[in-house]
Amino acid sequence: MGLNSEGRLGAYEPKGVIQDSIHGFIPINDAEYWLLQTPFLRRLHGVKQLGMAFLVFPSARHSRLEHSLGVMHLASMIAAKVASVAKRDQRVCDALASDCDRLAESLIQVARLAGLLHDIGHLAYSHMTEEAVKDLALFAEGRGSRALFEELTNLSGGNLKVHEAYAQVFIDRLLRLASEDPRAGKLKDLEGYLMAAKLSLTGSSTRSGLRVLEDLGLSEGSVKVIHDIISNEIADADRLDYLQRDAQATGIVYGNIDIARLIHGITLTIDPDGRPLLGLDIKSLQTLEDIFDARYKMYRSVYFHHKVLAFSKAITMFMKALSQEWEPGLFPLYGNDSLPSLLLPSRLAEAIMNDAYYFDDSELDYMVKVYAARGQLARRWALSLLDRRDLVHVSVFKRSEELVLVAEDVLRSKGLPETPQRVADLMEYVVVNFKSLIDDVKKAFSDRLELDFFKSSIVDAAKLQASGLRVFNWNDSLYLRGLAEEAKIPVVLLYAYSNDEKFHADSLRPRADELRKYIKDKVRDLMKEAVS
Image (cartoon, rainbow, N blue to C red; front, side, top):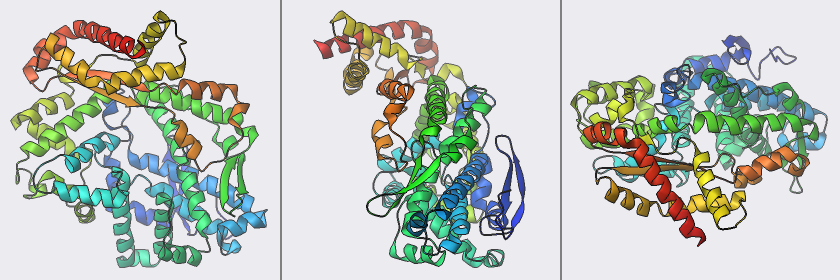
């Protein structure tokens, strides 16, 4: 169970175990048991890890809580390895701790709490509502939208990282609860461990935060290491859990990763400024290749599946329409407030604390069902979320490879090398000139038709280079070099839809194949224009 010599799990007495479908027995201690009884953790039972992906992969109904427990478990094992390495190297120990005798206990406990709480800020259907909340903050008119924008930007440093902003407020409320609840008062240093976990998740520290760390026997360097344990863009506890968990839940065969071998290969070095750096040794090469292979294929097969993304876009459309058509007082649960006001992080935190409302999947499902019977534009998009396939966005290209093949064909016709960078440039040109594509399609088909696109990268080279995880020379792996080169090509998918429910179902859908051919030809023309 990972107990220390005093019989404790982290800093507290073991309380029990949770049976997990991925990791088997996950032990929890008294502090974690207390946290799991709070409404902030309880609500994660009602937030699906993969949003509405279950409409494409029916068995993908696992929750954010399952994932959070898995990340806690993996973070605990990684932190234990780090503490073991530090025990054998005084320089490393001094870089991590103000009291080396307390290092293992405190480092493991903070890592466990950071893993447990890292996704606490997710709203209904996880990432699928984040774009909608951004839109409500940026573009919604009426009461509450400006306040929502200000709270989110202040919390996330201006970059609107939605679930991370909510997480900060929710953890602050947990800190208050820990100071008020007599049961938590019996758990020595719980507030300090929670504060250290929050600092680790944000990757920053304050003067008061440094005092908290010192009280726990840790140093500022430990915050960065724990942050990298949870999220380092390469092989972190978060990624290691969701790749395996999501693969199993969707029935995809990728994600078989040798966790034990990876943890065995963890190293710690000290940079010239005396800061500790988490790393992997060369013997972890094959395991890291497995991770990137699973990552590449899971994104292609699940996270960037054209229909999964179509439902994500439908949620955004529904919430935008819902904000415009919102009827104060329709839901007694929410009183007379506007939708943006209800979603203010500070307001939602208090609502969760009082079990007033959670804004989890079941609440959004209820909104969908109510507005499917009474809304206007909200009704149109609510019906698509009830799995009316005839009303979901039409995927113009079902695989990004279709656009890649068009780009390669254009390059060949011009006698140009079909390099990943040239292909990526042509796809970017299509995105930049998307407005002209929309205008052409509207003229040829109907003004009631709209186009949208999705563009993202599976592997972001800039993020990898900025990662806090130091690994062996990437050039030692021909496979990873090839994968990184291939990943320069972004995933780009195009969608057609109409806000007119009848037009979408009766006119757009029956002409989908004709529309696909027309748009493919226009995309080809745009790419030829780019290389002419």
